Image (cartoon, rainbow, N blue to C red; front, side, top):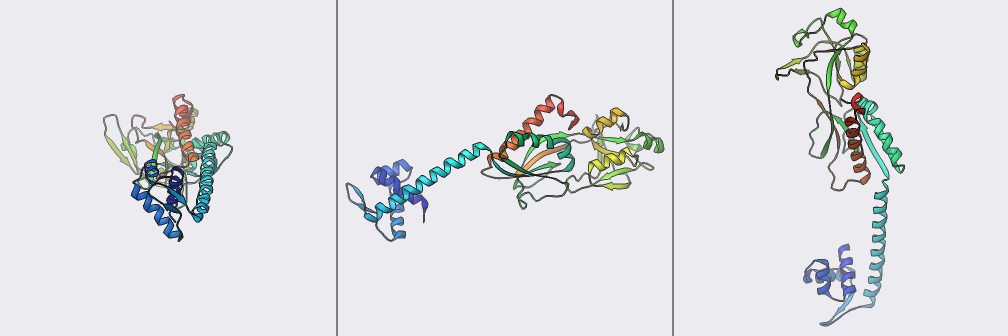
Length: 308
């Protein structure tokens, strides 16, 4: 059954005219008449007796019209309830993000969001695995690096800077690094590889735009930035690390920043989600909240220890 035809029938009966119903619905009179005729044919009964001057419901038409009014009331009430629930901000959200990004940056904002919206339930997974956002039904993924998928939408959250670091004990053993050309044997790196952050080679560039690529040998390969930081602190090699993780160790003297005159490309951190025509308000509210809160804190210098 064409449920649009039910609404058309109701409008015809309310206005007592095919012509007026067509004008009210923004349709042609022939379309309105055909829809009602199709409805009668599907039901196998005549609903309206037509004359040149008036319309009159048959007995079957009257009963069916009353049922249509009831259905219309139910749908209108459902719309009111859905709208009210959307305003309430409730329901489940499946969120996935890399481990360090969750612990060091976004986790506290997620907790704040939950406190503000007690009817929300968040399923938060901190993992460095590769994810299938659509296939796994993930509402929001915090992506480190770039992702190209026409079925996904990416909203930039911030750009993370990285530095080259080593421990004083390591440098005392292998020698100081004054330029990128010093990055050769006996120097070694702590190599990081995981499915979420695929950053294998180092690329450095100076103020004049000169670039230098580095791929040192390694004794240890790890799958988290936290493990890389600890190995670097323990003197197992040179590491490329997010600035926000290294800053307190630079200040304490446990790590030394190398090649400070050279820079590394920034790494985008984005919120990625499925390309939907109608996004649940709970998801849009969370995305807006994360972007707004992080930008506010970065402007005030609060998140400098987290991201910058």
